[in-house]
Image 1: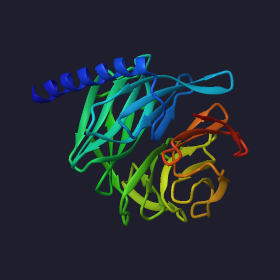
Image 2: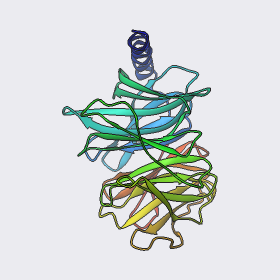
Image 3: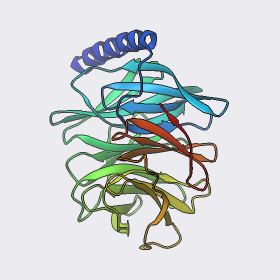
Length: 287
């Protein structure tokens, strides 16, 4: 009963925020994470407790809608997904020692949430298995939630030797979870079947976001500390990072998302969203 009451209150707060911000036409603010479905808007998680939808009218991106979630929660990551034929959003947020992952509509109505006593960091969603992967905010643990079976968070494995987990990415090809460590500057690989972890790549300063190429051959990483986006070859574990983009406008790259064959990069330091070409050149930006 307490959890159901909290869900009702949280849902009402989120929905009220969605209505007020849609009328105000808020700017991006400080984007800390982004995500996009192949068919749908690009969603930006704002460090000022808001979510913005960005659509591409022709070649020019523009903010087309926003909603605000309750103040006091520090945003961490965002993932967009499809469930029952509808687009939904997952948000990972923290308040004090408490971490939560919210599942909500694209207009901000809360559908469900899960609590984590050690906070939450990055999240990712695998559509075929209806599984959400979650990195702990203060321990080296990785969890999964099976939405099809409506399970509670289940321990997947831990990144041995890591210090502070950040972005999470599910690699369906190897049935593994890739996890960035923002302190160690490394990307760990957690094998789900055996619950074993190893360092896949290193040489980073502070990995903030990760995305695989369409064919899964390359891993792109937004390195906030190096003010760049780098690329690794998945066929060569342990290889050095290759710079993909290091445009002068970068201050602290925070998120990655594919927009067709272009790469969108959010930057919380620059308070902007950059759209890069396949060669890493700047195509457009918001604002």
